[in-house]
Length: 96
Image 1 (cartoon, rainbow, N blue to C red):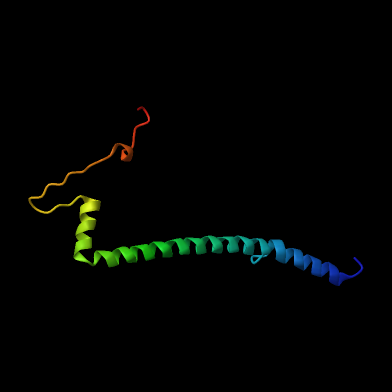
Image 2 (cartoon, one colour):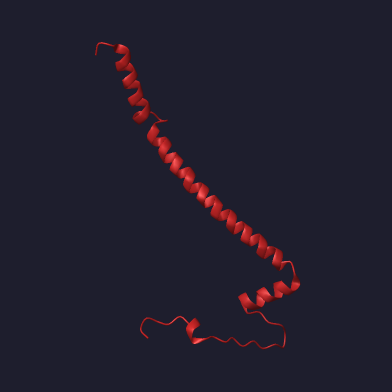
């Protein structure tokens, strides 16, 4: 307590580290949030790239027809489609 400057400086440092609106603890939380958002951004950018590749493929008429047949089981007029399912590809119920 002999040096008032040390006491004031210590009080100021404690205030800035723990109690201030821009405290060290808040900065740590914000840095963690930034890292989480950057990971999410990378994931979503990868999804965008995959979708762009799919859109490029679907610009071709044959690829669009193939996609519609495989994904949505669409067919041409006067055409029959047979779906073949193998036993190992079927989801079995827990009771069986």
